[in-house]
Length: 322
Image 1 (cartoon, rainbow, N blue to C red):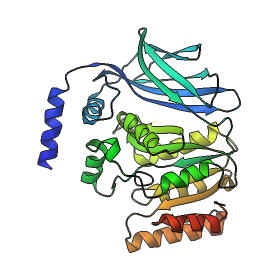
Image 2: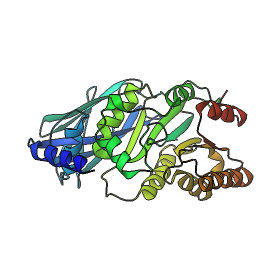
Image 3: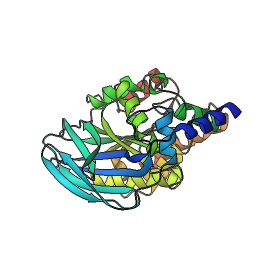
Image 4: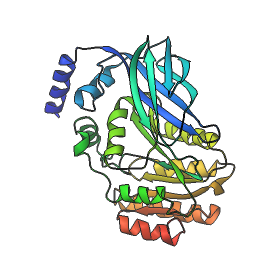
């Protein structure tokens, strides 16, 4: 632990270059209008880096929000201006094709960020997936291991949860029988980890999607963040079925159950799938109770799993995988 703290201090001391920087850009396809909604997090004292290493992460950790001003967002000849308020901005913009487009963000006529995106032309349902210990090994049940994995491990050293990239690609190719999905990766990680998490998703060939993170480590609690965004996603893609993925390490089962219980149309939730990572008897019993409750009251499949082969078979048994 002392060695970790020493490294933190040393890197903080040498991170001396500062500039306005865009920490995160989340983008939602608007299927009915050939446009996208965007939301950005912008800071005014971050080490300007497109990298995903420790120095860039620590720089993001130190950042202060850019309180005011404007950005210009451009794509294929379309341009819109967006006001900055306490480090955040948002808007909508037309794109030439949802299948492939690039967004560029400018501040004071200087390009801050350029990023390519690819979405389906339409989506029949929405996959909402947690990241840590759902598709990315993070060890959230140990705060020290979680911090080490998130901050000190390079993207190419991070491990996927076994079998999840292949499963998600199967789902993306229509293997559920529900149709074509749009993926939403919903995490309580802070915005300064956006670049490394996006690089992880690309490196491991997860289906393209929308990444949603917290603004900062202290901007709201885990449960409120996820519940709030589940409601926003349902509002943005009204009437589309949901398939929810999470893990048992934190509060995903409770969040998803509460979301179903308080939803006007719970039948739109086609299934809840939880990666079981603790193997504790009381946790297993709790998951069994959740499964029985959701199946009996709402007829919603609730699957908890530790081996990918067992998960796929359970999904087939419940009609969630061909």
